[in-house]
Image (cartoon, rainbow, N blue to C red; front, side):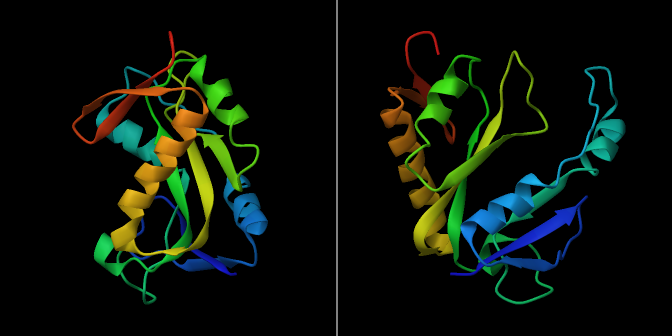
Length: 168
């Protein structure tokens, strides 16, 4: 199965589509796009934006070349992402340990710090998931991973689920 994805640096409105022949090739491509940035608490908003423009990003492909990256233009794709944004340092190793039997990869996001770890997990799905299905499939994947790692749903704040496992 081919893995199509948008890949760009900065904030282009209509990024080009890239293609990988396998999930392993897709993960290698994404993980190879490393850059060093420096964001400090005292930075002005524009300085922060300039630093973030150095980052590479990826997204599901669009239906037709040249379309903007909005949900209505998204084509089906066989992968999805889960962002772990408000974790404790002890939670990350527990979660990563549970990824073993699944086809996926993870990396630290630009906002990651040792005190407040931030992680993006990318899973391979068994079939292409449409834009309309993406939300519910992502929620189901998050629930599966968190429960396998021993976390329980504590509450939902807005659109974010809060999971707990002891002090983590």
